[in-house]
Figure 1 (cartoon, chains in turn cyan, orange):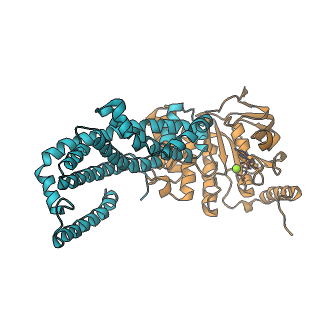
Figure 2 (cartoon, protein in one colour):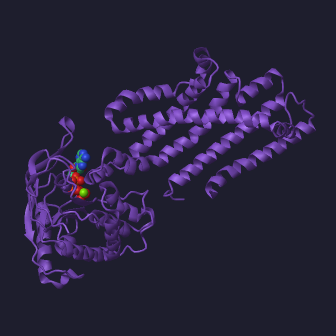
Figure 3 (cartoon, chains in turn red, green):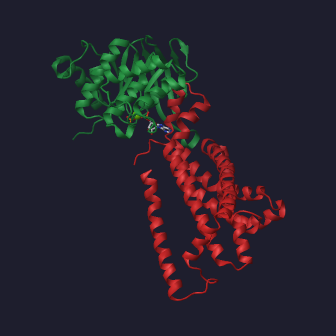
Length: 250
Length: 260
Ligand SMILES: Nc1ncnc2c1ncn2[C@@H]1O[C@H](COP(=O)(O)OP(=O)(O)OP(=O)(O)O)[C@@H](O)[C@H]1O
Ligand SMILES: [Mg+2]
């Protein structure tokens, strides 16, 4: 609880300080709102138009979670296979490393061409992008476990599933969670970018509309909401880790 | 209470890897361990002691030779066994008690029976109060004790221990040696005990098998005829010094020590 809070408290303070500076700069230099709106301006927009942000924010959040789960689950499964089978590793890992290096976000316009305006292409692209970091961290986690733990489980006549459930998974869990925590934040950005290019709802869509209307404060207001979602999801992930891995030393 | 199993090995060797990476780690050696016997294996580092334990438990296949446990050929890992691995090998995500209870969970044994046995082992091994602490919250000696409890809680017929006291200070070592001896006197499991320590080997065993440098073979078998339970200060017995000297002189002859 306190550790997770300490992690977000400092960025929050920085963020508040930055906003204050921003407000001052805008007022002192009397910058036009179109170029740079004052925080007081766009923060009020968040407050005043909150029903809209709630509706579209929830749509975006749902996509983030679906996309993340759709990427993380196969990532975990493949990581387990790669870590436990030489053959899988030799066959798949070079390909994984190669694809990981590609800027997959550039596929967003193609998703529109292939699948149109639907949830599916957005979830697919988010899954594709979250898949790789989860995979890489989980492989490292599964491989880090002491090989002799398999001796232990075999001497107990453990089934394959028991070995996985009681030994391999918990041993790899810290590395897996560290992958989850970095990846969930990436997923926020991915969903918004995808919505921005290809959507008729969600926060990315609001940004798109705001650009059409040259409504700069709305862009910033959306940014605030998106950041809040990112922070909330990271916090949720950190709490989940605390709940599931209570043994981790502080 | 399960009684001890017998272990008979004939001409077993172990070669790790294959072709260019092949490494002859052990043997050939023979073992004849009687039910309920306490046998120590002592030898220089890298001579194949841990390998012998892995072969005897069926966790690693032999390269040559054969092993029989209780008269039955060993073809897969034996499960009627408790193993204390070199440097304890506790799961750091389970508390001390839950590490021990892993035996019950995985083997699907009766929870209340095993829980009661675990509690009495914690009592006997001086682990009271450590039940709900994680391995990293325990001292090195306590971790070793927990791992001994884990090896005993399901009442196996055989106990394989790989330098179980290796990480301990001299005082804890003496205490835990006595605790183990008392447990063994009560239960008479067959014990194969691996050690670097001549004191421990002589202090605990019915028989000591002395191994040569790797690939290790058994160069001498020493029957230890001392009354039990044995005292904290083994030097009390003149025979103890005799046995210890004999092992030293074997090591000297083998060139294990390089004293000028
Ligand atoms: N999995 C393995 N693959 C290849 N070589 C191995 C493997 N395990 C052990 N060896 C080698 O086999 C030899 C015997 O190893 P082993 O662990 O049995 O020695 P040991 O007598 O237990 O040594 P120590 O007293 O230091 O624990 C060593 O030279 C070691 O390097
Ligand atoms: Mg060893």
